[in-house]
Length: 324
Ligand code: AHG
Ligand code: MN
Ligand code: MN
Ligand code: MN
Image 1 (cartoon, protein in one colour):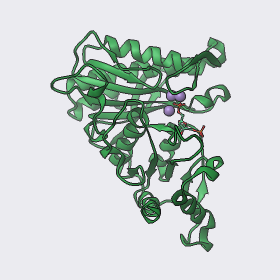
Image 2 (image 1 turned 120 degrees about the horizontal axis):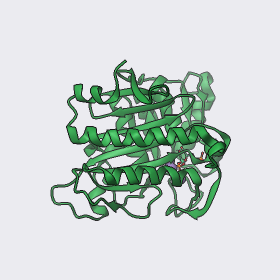
Image 3 (image 1 turned 90 degrees about the horizontal axis):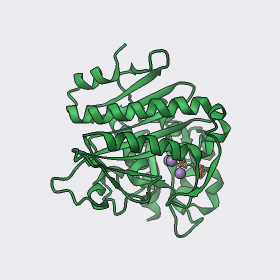
Image 4 (image 1 turned 135 degrees about the horizontal axis):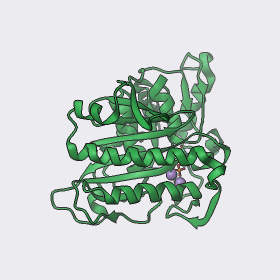
């Protein structure tokens, strides 16, 4: 089986990018190891701190962030990082050619129940004249040179794109290497499976209410087919399912908290996942435009997310258009 680095070389990825991806996979292996140690390593539970998003940080959010941060800032190819768990961007002492944004531990609420969690990363080119502040990160998702996620499940998987399709690697624990286990990913255009947190139903927009109502009506409703539902509460895990067998994942606008009408973050959740999904033949929208075409205004900006099987995403977008 092919190892990660030779596969990237065969794909003609630039050496600098391969080096950054290598750093990321080293961090992922260590995070995977610590997660599998679980309670034995005393890493479960919460800290006393909150992150910039107002979320209580789990110990593993902090451990994973620290690992990625330390390794990436040591890389000669990295210019700066942005993380869910860091208030602001962090400049590297090395003036590398890449910017890396990441969600160190996605699905934190699954940590204490031994559920699936992940890591999400987005790699952007450093602008020609870098501002050395947050504004250099504020590039459309289309500009990403690589993106991907690591899923820490029964096996640890790295799913990644450098803009030339999606490759899946599985961590072989015996040799400590990510090995290529799937060459391509192709999300079917149609699906009968969706993922949404139904507990927010009363706070949704009319567009999303009607869309989901019609899904639930099944064969008797306007969609004329039955739908099944899944919700893992970790975007990595929910999106991995649709990358594997199709589906629609959405975390839409909701009116719970007027100051935070969206949950997911554009730069290190929505945009990298959108790149993966598009590269696998699916679609990703905020209801009105492709996520990859959104011009970011802030590194911690939040956004509505609808992604997965192309025809189903299009359907959901039509409900948004209808309701204005
Ligand atoms: P994070 O753990 O990185 O803060 O992200 C959690 C996100 C995402 O992974 C998931 O889709 C969503 O939160 C789950 O939200 P609910 O708890 O509302 O289901
Ligand atoms: Mn969080
Ligand atoms: Mn997350
Ligand atoms: Mn997180």
